[in-house]
Length: 266
Image (spheres, rainbow, N blue to C red):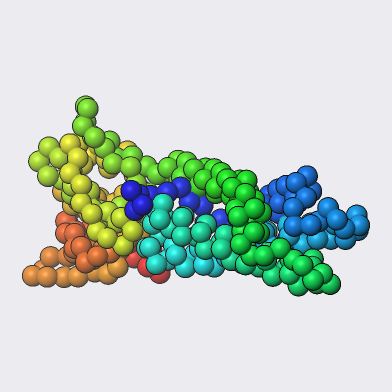
């Protein structure tokens, strides 16, 4: 379950919005609950301390974003429930630590009897996290779902005939499509991995639906985006594509294919 995909938005702009919302929420929460002895100070001191705690929350979130992107990179850009839990748990521990230091050395700098760590943890920090953390979770989840929705909207669908299932993917993930009797075999990238999917449809139908794909042979259409170089073997011309796929170039399409593919590599 922990390895299931979880909605995630890598946009820095959206995470800045979350950090600002977090800072405002911490300020409002502390203003009305008055924990950490802030109610005992003059208004000027009280507001400065509240702003200090708010900044700790917001800045801690922003400073932890590189750790988030490191987790994402280590997971091959696949964000999971475990990754989300790891980020939020580590962020919470570090924020509590910094808040404790701020309380000891700034808020209570001239006082002899500050609250003990265990009391603050049980009576103040954990209730505060239980109130504040859902705001972060909701914001991250909402932006993640919005990102997923936008991503899905950019995908194309290679449909199957009748009730047969099709395939949704990004156009530039398609490498080539090969005819196979009454089916087509779609070669595409899933991350950095080559995948193949068999779909019941005709190559001519797909070629008409997606004119951006280039016909190189009566049994092949390719995505010019993945063209690497030419290869000749036993007098026959082939186009080498990403992941070492070689598609034949028939004489019928040779001139047009050469003209288009050569222009893409110039």
